[in-house]
Length: 247
Image 1 (cartoon, one colour):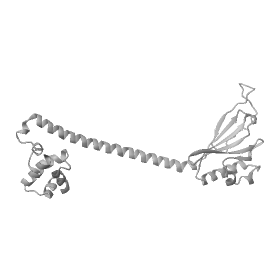
Image 2 (cartoon, one colour):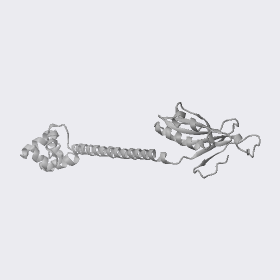
Image 3 (cartoon, helix red, strand yellow):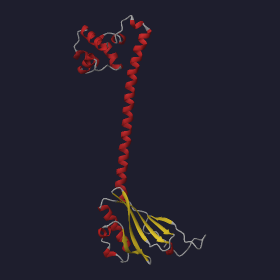
């Protein structure tokens, strides 16, 4: 067996395990493992070991000079070496794939963290909707995520003045967190309460996703040009405060 051959040839050469390890460029424990049979040398180490012991790789694997000439046995030994080389190559491939996916995962986490930091500092686009139900109240809807759930808060608007908030509907305690009562029916209270809502949501650990302004179709003066009997609903995005809002 290979382990016996290594030990036998080392003793014949008068080498200690340390001396042989130095010639093969491995540590003494590796030589000890080979001689005990708990591990075997790979292809490169096998060739270095053969040179250090002054024999061929075939002799090291247990073949005599005559056996080296037997094609069948030589082919078997060659296939054994090929298997070892293939196994090492596959191990390296797995390592490379693991490193690649680790880098991809790290990049994804960095991107997610960047978005988490960047998004709250961006100006939200306001979505304006005209509902086809004429008797629905007008309201500003603030959509946010809290504890993994999407929730919403409604600021009910004065139909005659869409900058004035006349009511608040949402999660229990949200109106109190915003100090909404003192601002209800005040001119321009929509902007102030919207900002307070953003702050209250963030203070609870939530994330504001978007603001939506819902207006009843009756709030518009013109109807669908294709159907005079049915008010129409449209939507648009206003990215800055200086854009005209068509109500």
